Length: 177
Image 1: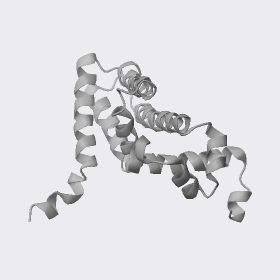
Image 2 (image 1 turned 90 degrees about the horizontal axis):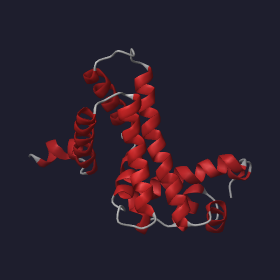
Image 3 (image 1 turned 45 degrees about the vertical axis):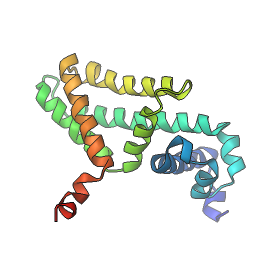
């Protein structure tokens, strides 16, 4: 264990594990990510990760909620810069920019995509729906978009998610040669 890791408070260490888990679960999903790999990335023992969170599932749920809150916080930050009477198109554009900036960190994008693919799971499915609906609530309630505007916003967002997951923007020019 490094000297820096040894001096961390329990809250700092917890944040370090959550950051490591966001990377691992983003890369490998729930089924592929292991607490051992998360521990190695965080520089602590696997037993400590389990002791800290109770189970891999509990850690995954917390990381998923954290990724969701990052999206909600990015949206709230964008909304805070706008006049209260900003037109819906402006609100949508600024929410979209905030989301694009956030998912430049692919770990957030991929973690949420892995979560949403777990809709069938009896434990993770309700968490996935809760997370999605919490972001939907920000868009409808705090951004004030109508149901139709929100539907269009999320449809475009899902398309962006697919394009980013495929790394299409980075590979489009190379693949067209």
